[in-house]
Length: 380
Image (cartoon, rainbow, N blue to C red):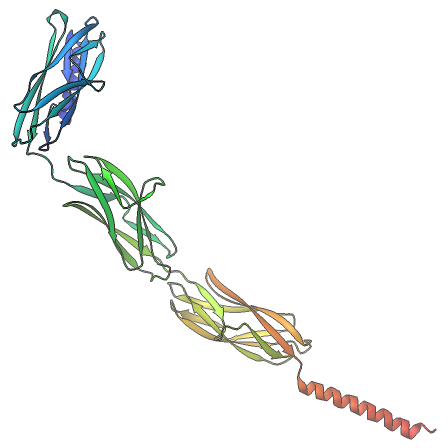
C-alpha cells in the first residue's frame, strides 16, 4: 500500500515536471482489505494541471453489486467540484456494504469530467476476508532497572495495535506479593487500567512498579500484559533491588534513661537493630558525654548485623567523680558506612552513700575535737 501511494505521488510530480495538462483523481490506497460489514470512507483528491478554473463533474461510474456509494464534500453529497488552476480539492468516498456480503474483491470506479472533454478515472478495489487478526505488542528500551527498596521503578512502554480494527485494551500485571504496579499515559498523564487504540495506533505508557519497603535485596521480575479479546501481549521487566542498611539504637526495654553513681562504672544494655534490606558491616559505636565522663562499649565494634536482625551491646558509663547529683544527657551513636542511628540517653547521677557517711564522720570528729579542746584548755 505504501509503495502505491509513493508511486501516485511520483507520477504527480512527473506530470507537473513534464507540463502535463488535465485532471488527476487519486487516493493513497486504491486497493485495500476491509472487514465484513464495515463502512469504508476513502479520501479522494482531485487535482488540476494547467487548466483554467472550472466546475468538474464527479460521479461513481461503477459500484459493486449491493453496495452503496456516496461522494462527499464538506460533509454533503456532491456531484461537482470547482477547481482553480493547478489547485487541488478533497473529497470523501463513502462505501456501505450490503447486510450479507461474501468474501471476495469488490470493484468501484470514479470519474471526473471537466470542460473540453478533460476526463480522469480512478479504479478502486476492496477485498473482504483478508483482514488482519487482532494483535497487540508491548515494548520497552530499558527492561531492567536497578535501585534501592525505597525507589520507584518507572518504565517507558510502547503499546501498539497491530491489527486493522479499533480495540479497547485492558492493562494488568503479574508482580511479586505486595508490589504495586500502575499504568499511566506518558508525560504525566492520568493513571489508566484500559484505553482505546485505533487500528495501527501506538501509545506511550509510563509503568511504575513500587516494591514494599521491607523487601529483600535481590532481582525481581514483573510481567506487564495488554489484553483485547483474544489479542494479548506480554512484556517482562526486571527490578534489581540493591540492599540498604537502616540502623536503630535503643535499650531492650525501650527506655532511654537510667541512674548512675558518680565515679563508678555503670553498665547499660543497648540494642543495635538493622531494619534495612542489606547486612550492616563494621558497625562502630561512639558517644558524646559530659566533660570528665567516660563511656566504653563492649564490644567496641560489631562485625556484622544481618538484615532484619539485632545485636546487643553494653555501654559502660562512668560519671565524673566530681559530678554533682542531677540529670545529665549522653548522645549514643551507631554507624555503618553512610547509615547511622543515634539516641539521647538521660543519666540521673547520685553521689555515693559511703562518701556521705564519711563526711558525717569527719564532721563528727571535727565537732568532738573542738569540744575536747574547749573542755581542756578553755579554763586556762
